[in-house]
Length: 405
Image (cartoon, rainbow, N blue to C red; front, side, top):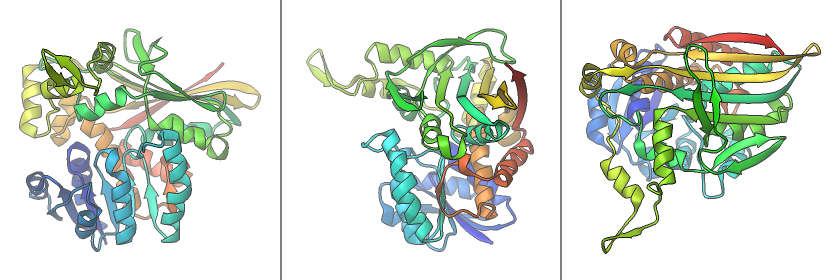
């Protein structure tokens, strides 16, 4: 029986905690957050949980909350990752998060550091750290590796996320607006001809047609983990792939691009009638936050859903038996109304949180025998199959399409 600390019990952390509360191999869950009221409210709805106060910027408070835990699941923003990882090492617990850290040294350099020094630190203690375990990164990486394993060689990997949801109530982002806009205004990464390439935000726009969507969608490059981790692992686990991209599209991307091009995402101060203000701070002051509690989500649904469409495509190209092959994997998951009816949560929380919850179950069950720091594309075939099968039971399914080119 395992004891698990879930630190950061917002949208994703609470989903993970609820899932683990039903797991027969979990004896106790510590729901920890700097907002003790939030942690207490969540733990009161669970049968195996208790609340604790913990500050992601203070490793000592994380260590105190995590004493005796076998696994620490990090649901905090990525700037806290290294502190939570340090706490896991101090406690002697395995570790899991939803996205790798991006330190001042740079995104690529941060992952190189994780794959070297941090890998050795966890391995030396006989512990596992599984990094980047949501839907993307996370499930996307599992699907990429499974597709690549069907090929003799791989030439291209594309990951495309289109979120076309629109409600009558203006909800620009269904997770933290600060995190969302911070990601969108950061320089993009892609792996091109075997080299990492950085570019400006919203670069390389492309019109794309997705299955199940009756119109073309404008997609742009977006800063994300997958081109970085997969580029670093291209030769070791992805059969020599030389081109990897991540593109994002939808109303929230169009909004963010307009704000960025008007300079309203700048954190540099400007003079406005004699007052120095940062445009980004003004936007954060005005932008609605994502609904978190069931009554807030219910109100959005009751006001009306204008459009609930989207697509999550993982595309891999390569060669098999002398022929060029393209493998498309489309992931299906519930929309807002269905996700709320099933689990009292948003579609965003459901898709990302349930993926993370399944990865956490994999760790509770000890299915990954490797020690050290890994990302999902490094998991073996048995672990990858576990993730896909468990998600199918949660109505997150994958349709595969093969095309000889």
